[in-house]
Image 1 (tube, one colour):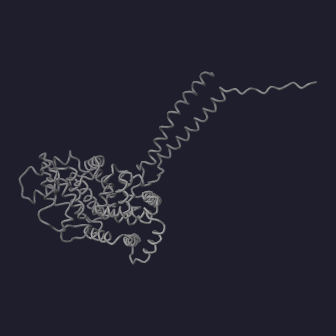
Image 2: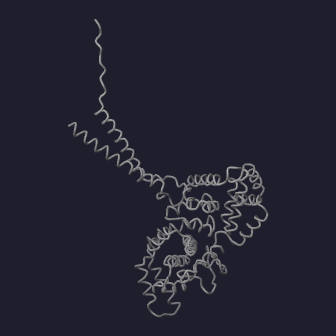
Image 3: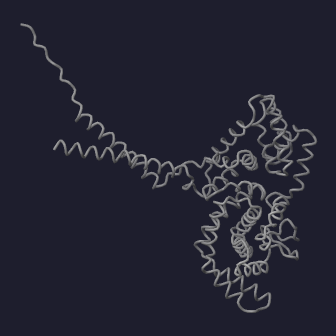
Length: 425
């Protein structure tokens, strides 16, 4: 009986030793991977990420107070030389964390006297005054050439045009010869070369035909364009957001600023929304017969519209909403910089959290730290039912292991009995 009991205790003990690290690893992965992070970050996670950003900028600057200003001055000038206005502005906003205490006090006093509505604008204006005049003029010139915020700027289009030297991108160029009016965020205005990103259904029909023939047409760009053009016809906020996000994705794809992992992820998402098994036959049928240009374009539009999988599109729109929010909080070139190191949906949420907490400072952070900046986003722990069950299981396993250890110790270790000395008579 004792041997059987000891054997069972040994089996339970060894099983718990193997099981507990597995449960602990799964719990930690679920808690900190970002998989359970909600679509919209909480106030707590934004505040914590903002504190992390402050600490990171403070750690970037040299410890010696005399070197802080030169380092900050040089890093702002570097971004202006690269024509990255968002990153330069981000380092201006990070001046309170990167400069010495005396300079910070001067900044705070100067910013309080600036007559601007937003605190960030006041701080940026005050920080700009601390830079030499030539750098200040460079910043204003670069800011003017970048165009309005939250719209595709000339920088992203220059990258796009340079990237289109690739035959695959050249054949998928969706910019029409004529310049029609373009609708952005519900406002119609005369076309600006910088805003012509999506093209037209006529371009989509031509590129779809090339795709069917096996030409080097990027299917990711093709499907992004199709969904954006279809969404552009809607008037709801979701459609507007999808169009903006599609423009950012298309610019990033053309400029080759998407990681292979995120490219594969978006390709899978787009294929769920527009399955090749449904889309190809529909396009072959639409383009198989001779027709006038207008009829041909209508048929292609209907083929894409009828091939959309509602469930797949709904999942894709969750990612598009994240990208759109990043663009709205920063700008199109800044959004491309923030998603440049993204690999999956978790990273995309982290990039969105960085934008929520830091604005243009998040762009500067990504330019400085690269993919490591995404780890600064503190998504917190969301206590889902599955995570709570795993923690409860880990606790129960720990208690069971403790019980087996105590029982084994009591069974195998015999303490010597105290001898009682006979009392003398």
